[in-house]
Image (tube, rainbow, N blue to C red; front, side):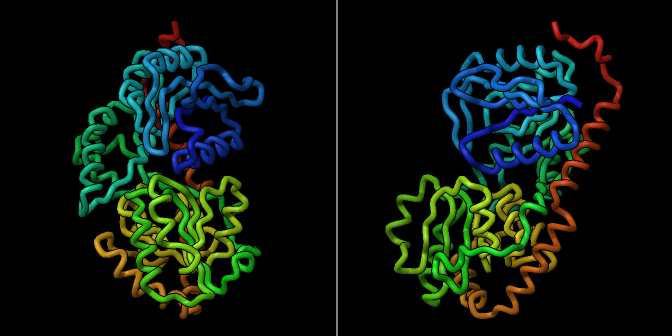
Amino acid sequence: MHIAWLGKKSPFCGNVTYGREVTNALLDRGHLVSFLHFAQEEGVDDPMGSGYQEVSLPCLYKSQVYTIPTLKASKVLKESLKQLRPDLVHASLTLSPLDFVLPEICEELKIPLFATFHTPFDGKRRNLQSGRQLLSYQLYAPFLARYDRVIIFSKVQRNFLVRLGVPRQKVAVIPNGVDIQKYSPGASTFKSRVNAQRLFVYQGRIAAEKNVESLLKAWKQSNMSKSSKLVIVGNGPLSSALRPFYGEEYGIIWLGFVAEEQQRIQILQAADVFILPSLLEGLSLSLLEAMACGVACVATDAGADGEVLAGGAGIILNTARVTSQLHTLLPLLQDHTEWTALLRQKARNRVLERYTLSGNITQLEQLYHDVLQQPRVQLSSRAWG
């Protein structure tokens, strides 16, 4: 099967990780993958011989949140698809205007079109940020209805899209998955390197929707032991504003963005507790990676993260009172090692049961197969010319 994957290679974010992990897994299973991504210059980057090639789509600007293509990007995309002749297109949606024209392009070329819709949400709509996200869902829904299938991460998100008019039969719930061989419990020297007996970790963007300041405030107010450390992994627009007020004098270590994946894994393997205080999420890959490494996890019920931890696999916070809840929990998680040991085991088991990358790819392959088997215009009559 030849899959044309439309996604991002940079800057680093969950969308980038998702695209890398899924396309690599598809290649490992013998599929042909063409990766179309946004860059400053268009063109084909790699030869086809290895079963993989990259096509650059011109853009004016791209960030971790959205992408602005050039005016000619849609033409480059269409011409590239004509030349590639894929069996299907899978767009890992990048909050770009191309997301809205892609159904028209694929309808003209008679190519089945899939989307993974990453846009985070708070299903209970408890804050201003979630109101903005609701607008994003309302904007996207009419266009998602024209895709052959839309992949989302939770039943709550599916019901949300269906209420906005996306046909239920077009919405498939396939959660994110983790490579459980790579992300697994293991020995790590990181805790000793930062001189910690108890290690708490946040990993992700330092942005308003991630609500990192609520965690920092709770840590500062909790009078944690000097042997307990909070490590912040990641960067973002709020980093420079927060770091001066929450520094090493409070046991907080800012690592910034850690590019090396194995180093990030070693941090998780050393961690006792992983905390994700987000106001908005889709389904956090960072959370799943921590769980796969056997870390006790605390996260809000934003997006699908509450579903992941439900039933005792972790501790679920209400997004409305994150600081006060963490102020109570942090000393307990510090002192009760038996409790965190139990949570570590349950976190790993939950990933093994529901969130493996292998299981994710098997579901995705079946979805591809089901759509390709539906009656369509014959392949020989596709409008390539």
